[in-house]
Image 1 (cartoon, helix red, strand yellow):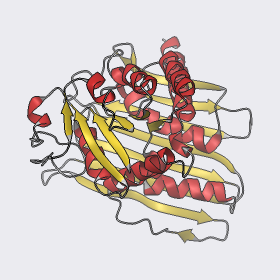
Image 2 (tube, rainbow, N blue to C red; image 1 turned 30 degrees about the vertical axis):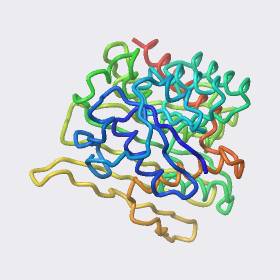
Image 3 (spheres, rainbow, N blue to C red; image 1 turned 90 degrees about the vertical axis):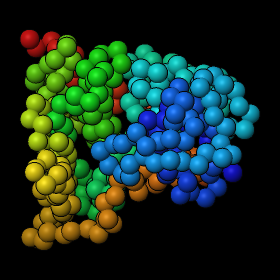
Image 4 (spheres, rainbow, N blue to C red; image 1 turned 180 degrees about the vertical axis):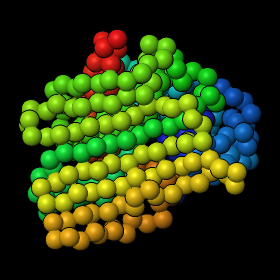
Length: 347
């Protein structure tokens, strides 16, 4: 049995708690949260942009703490799951590792490459697992793309274009703080930076152009450079002021003998949010075929359950971290740093 302690009971903490309940051989034994109402089980004020709304929870048998240090010191906890704001990730993860716990930390890994390196060093010294919650490779469309790429069935990957754009999130008061969240570069685009690192390797350079706000990238285009000069990879990301276009993400990935395409959008209308494919996951082959894979019902909650199931297997020694490896997450932060430097240098 893997015994989990969750630190931070916001929307993502709730998603993790609900996901762990679906898994066998895993149990949440402790929760840490400074909001005493939530700590007592009243989660009715928790709501996100997917999944179920918060409800009254029965936390019988779950230890509750207001201090991260107290949860980390709980001898019943094997794995510390950190769903705090990004600025707190490094210190809490390092404390958990130094206490001899495995740690799973939500993305982004940290606010800086230096903090990522400190986390990596702490994991190596403790000889414990440190995994970072990049869930995108577990989302059905992106998992499908990785499978096709890694299979080699359609030749090597030669290029890709990625897009991830949201409307400005006024409900997140610290979104545009370089110290707290880091704006859309670290909170949003880091997903695609991580996926690009997985699919194409580590870029050796970037050219990024776009707008900025509070000395942070706001909306931008990036062209990535690799040691393989034949790779052509591009990304668009950021936040826009038009609130009716809530969310858009997708990709077009070129292989030697196929193109993989997918775009999904959420827009506001008088009848409420409308979520739909602009282009369903499609493989276009050189024989003139368009192939639509069967990827399930698309419920984002399933991706988190799959991701956390993978975490549990890693802790038990049954598999490797794979896409959750902290080294990959560190590289994603480095890619975001490269893009930020390129954009801000071009004034």
